[in-house]
Image (tube, rainbow, N blue to C red; front, side, top):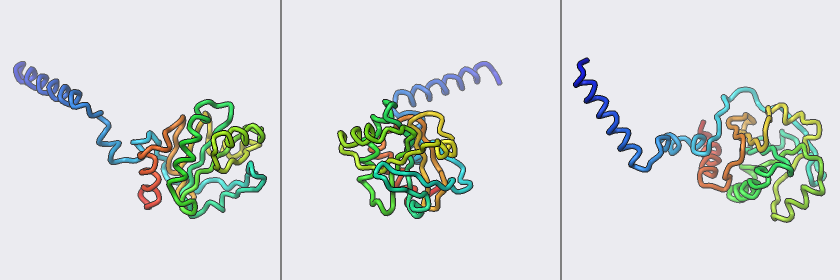
Length: 188
């Protein structure tokens, strides 16, 4: 290719880049708009084996079994009261839950923080009514490979983990509601 042709292609490339940057639209916008996982920065998990079954005691004193969640889309949120970002995102998780029928979608929080009184006071102070399950021996945390908090796992109605977010998210956002609707409708 001749020098003039290279200069012309370089100029066209540069002009195209400037047009994209000048438009104010992020380069990933088209992907995010068409993919609810990308819009919320939730990593897709290749659908494999069902989640490991668990029975955990709840803050309310009852026991929750994973099989009781079958048939619902579930957002499992691993958190602790000593984790600032976990506490900050908790109200948004409660708002997301309030947007959906609890017979179809359930936010479930899991903690290894074994201070029920402190957890109850924290949730009562904010008026949050989400289930809190105690992972006393960290078996469930290990089965979901939780390495940092908060970690949130999205589970389909048939009990398969399909998405994972490490770090806080704005769970009360339209993107979050769109992601839940997407999974409720059986979209991959």
